[in-house]
Image (cartoon, rainbow, N blue to C red; front, side, top):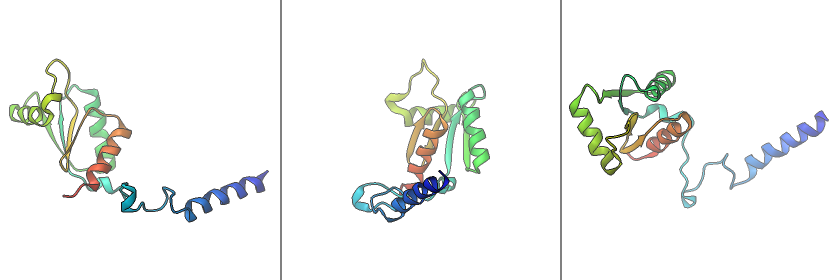
Length: 131
């Protein structure tokens, strides 16, 4: 049984190493996909528009602190200029009857709301964007 598992593991590893279309290799420019080094998103400067009471804002802060991601935080309840910038950046997506936090800006990309997986994807896209 162990030999079979080892054989399957070796075959899988060989597939990813020698298959040019596998995701383990750097995608070509023709594929339209962009290869991003793991952890490259840690070099992205993030603007966080938040409030003190928002639980998702707290989760985002904790994640960025844990991962060493540099960010500038604007409290949209205490800083009227920050709220106006956020409204301008959100445009039609701004909804005065709903919470518009957390809201992120990085390298010209914006994201409203927080889940760790989607936030990491947002950071990866921002990291790959030309500066």
